[in-house]
View 1 (tube, rainbow, N blue to C red):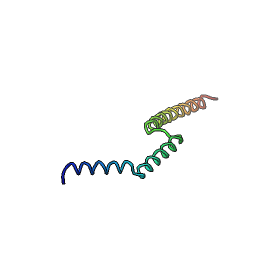
View 2 (spheres, rainbow, N blue to C red; view 1 turned 90 degrees about the horizontal axis):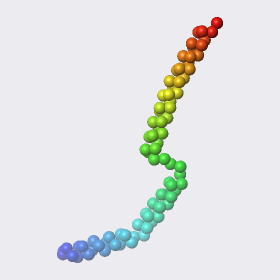
View 3 (cartoon, rainbow, N blue to C red; view 1 turned 90 degrees about the vertical axis):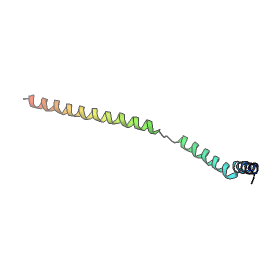
View 4 (cartoon, one colour; view 1 turned 180 degrees about the vertical axis):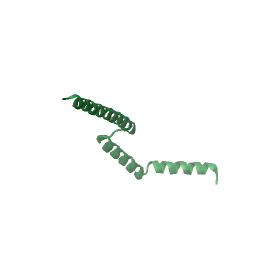
Length: 81
C-alpha cells in the first residue's frame, strides 16, 4: 500500500470519528454532568485538606483549654474553705 493512500484513509476515518453522533452524545453527557456537579455545593480536595488542618488545630487548642479550665477549677476547689 502506498503511504498517501494510508494517510488519506486515516484522515477520512478521523473525520468520520469526529462527526460521529456518539461523539456528540459524549459531549452532551459531559456538559450535563459538568453543569450538575457545578450546582452541587462541593469543595476541592485542597480546600478540604486545609479545613481539616484548621479543625485539627482547633481541637488541639480546645483540649488545652479544657485541661487548663479543669486545673483552675481544681485549684479553686482546693483553696475554698
